[in-house]
Length: 199
Image (cartoon, helix red, strand yellow):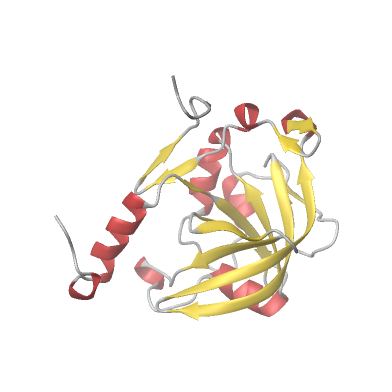
């Protein structure tokens, strides 16, 4: 089979992309609104954008369902406050992460809705997820409109890791971390680590 994206609808292209670019890490993005309301939402269009200076990027799509035609609170808050935190999701945080992904009104605190603990950041105003094994504080570098979505690039200005996930020498214990991955409409856990060539 082969497809011409120009001849397909947005949903069909999204299915092909989200089922092919896998597994994707999940950025659990915490922000704060102008009114001081805490917001938390997961995004799997997420990766490292630069090493020096360290930059991370997420792609934020338009609102869906009853919020179709609107901008997501994450985008609105980052554009307004120019700061955010990327919290890393491991498998045991899957359920609260899914709860925070629901289409809740802008005045609802997703930390409370998901039963999570907000804690102060070292540099930025948005709170961190205490339960998350890794939290990366970011300041907005730029927002690039790309078609239906917005690519948000932030410079990492502070990094937090819980002691149990740190091996020393700036290395993360990936086996303990057990990061949650996104696979189209499903999720994956890290079951085995190996080196290539595999024997």
